Image (cartoon, rainbow, N blue to C red; front, side):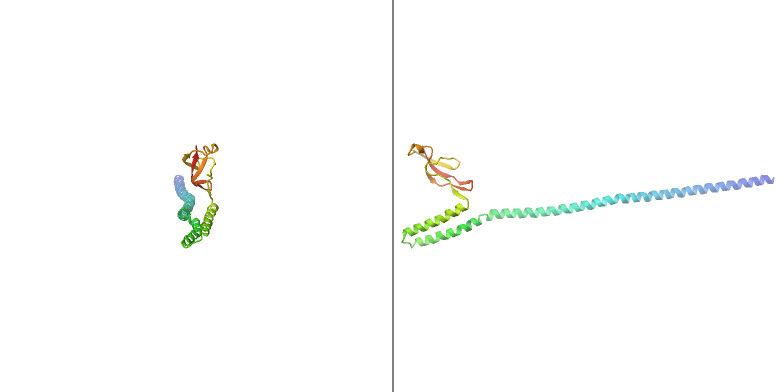
Length: 202
């Protein structure tokens, strides 16, 4: 009887210890699961933090590129305005130097006209006008303006000559050639600025 009670007591103690072990095991598993979940959450947060850094870097690079683009656009706009102003000034005041060089010749003409009213020496007056004409001609030549050849006997060239009339050629050699020049033609460097008007022999 006592053996039976001892056996029952032993079994009860073993069962109790087994139950406590199971509970302890389950509690350990719960704690371990909680720790794993917390570690996983921390790991996910860490990953999200690491992924946020490249985005921030890219945003900073984008901001820098945008700032550089805006600066370049502002510089280009200033350059465009300056070039436009220079072009307008060139179109408006491009002939300034040419006119400044003509002013001394105008002064000479004015003095000649004033002297002409009181002049008695016609020859001196003629020489004065020839000097002024020479100065004007020299100025034009130095500026790149030249006379188009259109002397009697020169070949007619429709690119630089305009035949205003046909005239019976005085000699057979002048047939189809220039007989006389009615209005001189001029070139500025290689460009015709006024075509020569000539009489052509027929």
